[in-house]
Length: 390
Image 1 (cartoon, helix red, strand yellow):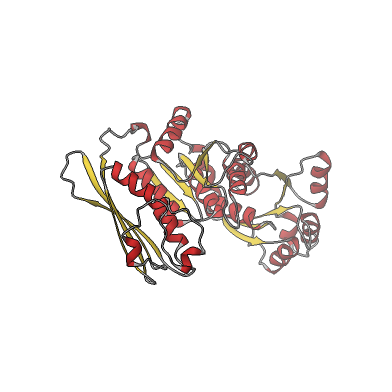
Image 2 (cartoon, rainbow, N blue to C red):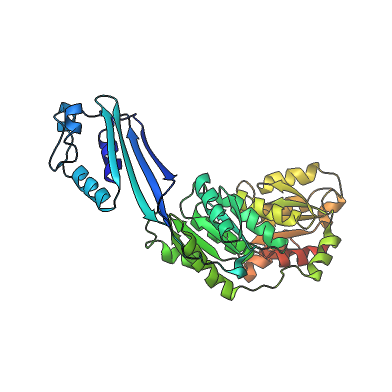
């Protein structure tokens, strides 16, 4: 740490700092010989000072160095630590061109048997982080644990992958999710996963920051555990073992679901929803049941799409109630008023979080056939579609 901080202090802005660690052949059994090379292209040191560099309170007599705060004890302490470890420290430097420190130490090799768990072998885990390096590192650790690691770089991608796995009956064993991400952060992603998949998939929040202030909010949203970065295999193993004890190993797919899918295959639905993420997720879910989906972002666009279609093009309309430009009630009334036969008979199903009796009455009064509450339960939605168009 001292050698790195010195490289930072004595290298002007725009310079380069390097750290290379190499394992060398070791003549001693059960030990490894490691070489740490710290390099920079900073201000460097004079030849005269190099002969006194490891002496306490010594500092180079250089105008640039005089402007930088320091006691002259750091390198003396570093040298002492290296010597106590039976290692060596060397330095190369040229004034105005930079410095290079080479530290070599012997370290005992880790000879304990790594802990593993056969129950975890082959289980799939999804890693979600906008940093590709974090994803690749976590996936590598999962592979070392005998698990299958997959990763995506955004919250919205994660929601679709989790839903897709759930619908196919191949749920992820767990999701490892970063707290801070652009566009859709960790909290929004947790809520979306819980909304569409329920509590079947454990969610682990990872963060490089102190999460004590947000822990309660994440737990209420549906998070199951927290791990700080950097990720360590031992900590991940412990958390997965806890999940494994309570995991339900039953298959999610049922014969009834397969029956519903086949009877709805090929039907075309007009999905009207102003929220981009909700629309994307609903489309993905319905397409998994072999339905064809057309989308509209508000009631006005839905009216225009239906009006411009041929009679019989659409088998059903899924209509959100609260939308800008034209809400679901207005759009339904306008569609029912069109001078074409299927305008009076096409099933229009309301999508709304409001389930009071007045809301249900309002939907039926506008000409809607049935009310489906949000968040959408895909099983219930398929049952309703089966009822009307199956």
